[in-house]
Amino acid sequence: MDRSFAIILMAVALPLLVLSCGDPGGVVPDTPPEAPALVSVDPADGTDGLTGTSLSVVFTYDQNVKLPTADQGKVSITGGGTVTKVNAYAQAVTVQVDGLEQGKTYTVSIPFGIVTGFKENQPGAAAASVRFTMKAEVSYGRDPQKTLTDPHATRRAAALYEFLLSQYGKKSLSGAMACSNGWDNTFTDMLGPLAGACPAISGYDYLFLNWPPKAWNGCPDYGDITPVREAWEAGSLIQVCWHWSVPKSQAAYEARDPNQYAFYVSDNKAFRPKDALAAGTWQHACIDGQIEKLAGYLKLLADADIPVIFRPLHEAAGDYTWGAWFWWGVDGADPCKQLWKYLYDKLTGTYALHNLIWVWTVQTSDAGQLADVEKLEAWYPGDDCVDLVGADLYVAKGTTQSAVFKRVNDSVKGRKMVALSEFGNLLDIDGYFREDAPWLYFLAWNDYENGVPVLYSKDDQGNYNWNNSASDWKSALGNSHVLNRGSVTDWK
Image 1 (cartoon, rainbow, N blue to C red):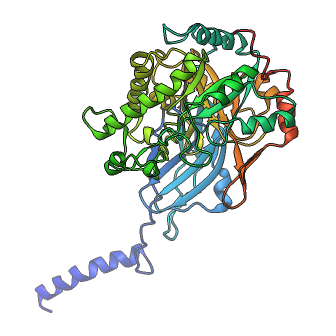
Image 2: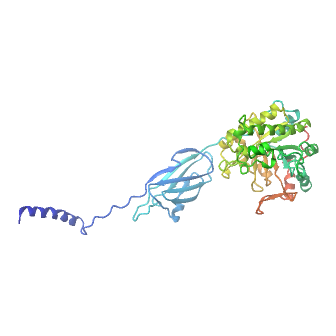
Image 3: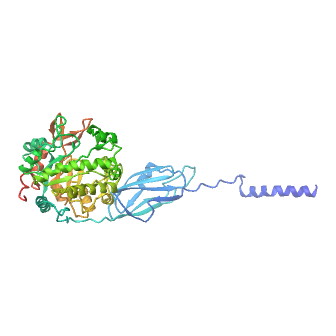
């Protein structure tokens, strides 16, 4: 045999011999797939200062993963709270936890092996956990400012404020919107005989400010203060709000056509606070004219020495996630606060109206949940131009809303009295006093069917928005914590 050929045969045969000795079958086994590896967790481990009562914790892996339903109960939280949902999708495992409390530290853990990939014979992922701490919010007591913000307040306005201070924490004043058209007493006239008492506060609305008096059947004449005077002389306090309608376009403004005015953002996208505050714009000219007209009507009440709990620009923030529903909140917090201060300065300064007690309505909803206190604070116009704060709540009957009360109180650091400035269903009055959430007053919104006042409200599908019975009202106005018409006259 040729020597060189023999050498070649040996070179070929040797590796085959080695393979056959190492693996009788002659096949090298595949390397097993690696377990899914954790890439990140949100929130990151050690995060501090989280807010809210619920949280979604997201574990992200380096590949698509699954977590069988049978194993989801093994995902845990320590420190309190509850795991309410576990979901694996694509590369993420999301753990929803609820019942979190301020200042507490929690650890969410996924045990070894229950998170797997989609490859055959693939081991489960290593155990994973994340530790986080909720923000410890400061809780304030109640220490409202002792005088009104207007240093030139009338004697009666100052006396009324002192009376409210004397009752805060001890009593709640009852209240209701008195009217069907913003300027009558049809609702409270109906409610009094049914409930055995009339509310301490009668509410009115400059809703139809842009219309000439008596422009249509039922259109109010704000120049005739008879309805307000009658309620005042009967022993009620007076609250006035202002659904501030503005033109939908410059053409509507120039035509002075109130049919083309609106206050809802959904009906009016052309009128914005930033434009209204800018000198030289038609929007600025518009609000100046409206404020002048409003001032003329408010002066009639001032001349009659009737102090007014005045609540403009209400519900400005809307919902902090879903947005504003009134035009005065559509540009966000800062323009709205500037508009509030502009109105305050105009009425108290330019028009010398000193019979007003100014109420700022604090919005408390964020995606339908109780908002963080920082969001409430961001919209607050300031201690120098707000006398009272309120919340407008349309909630289940018989609740206390004490968490809302305390959140609003904390947002102003306890320096303002807190009222339930608008509501649908009556609350549990004894309950909110037990829970140290003593709403200064509660003022019901109202509704009418075929021109007749009713104690409930229904939506277009016939579902109740709220539903208070005559016995509900009788119980509320008969509560020992409640002051009604006639019980609030000594301060005069």
